[in-house]
Length: 375
Image (cartoon, rainbow, N blue to C red):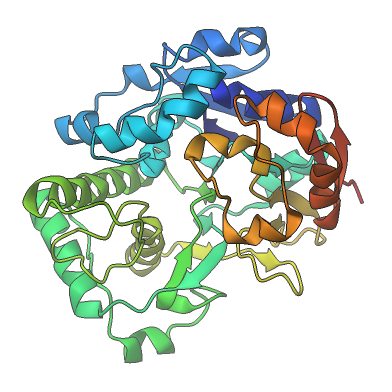
């Protein structure tokens, strides 16, 4: 089962694209949203299963700082005002809010699932998707390798010690020394304890529901602790940095991929879970987000997902001028009132962009549909 979240009117574009490119796998998708956003996706209400984050009991730290961008009246309002919405509230987009999907997975008894970002491309082959999930062994977790993280182990352990004590975690939350970590085998195929996993995809096949509950409790506790430190104990200007270099005061942590990366290790050490950083970086590509996920659990090497950020639907992040990796495409940003405006002014360039990364692509006046080629 794939799970992703959508909030706000501009994200309907992503659902349009996902549905057009993956019409055959809707039974393997659950979407987390909120009741204010739900009407924007009305044409998909009967096709996909939706889960409301409003029904999750969130602590006051999450409610105060993990703000959902759902008060915009339309796509144009969303694109224009998302960045200022978070600036005015002195916070940032809550990337780890996808952890709340654990509630519905626990409720349904689904122990085998994959959390993805809503801009991830999935193969439109129901049999391949079924084979993929059926082939992931129990007691496994998988996520793409992103980077090596070199924070002092003492700083990591200070943070996890605080989480363990404050939230009464009955599990050993201690990172070993580098010497011990280097001797561990079959833990991370990419980097052992220094591996940080990219947040766009996290896959699990838990042995039992109790393990899911424990994973969620630690994940949720860690994020709450980070938010409290960042916003209340040591309030400083927001720094978009995933490093743990200032974990003692929490200033530099907002998109904390390290949390799940460390959790994968804790579950390996305490409960015997295996972790696979199942990532293939496109050869010669220096942009780390251009990645492919392939099944590495005994099936032949077949493509399941590909993640490539979409220039046309990142407008609401305020990335103008665009991220450095897009400069050589010379996209026209003269009209970015809506995604349609941007697409219509950049059809040929967008087609070239996606073809470069091995997509079959259809470009209309309003949308870009990148599909994974079936091989």
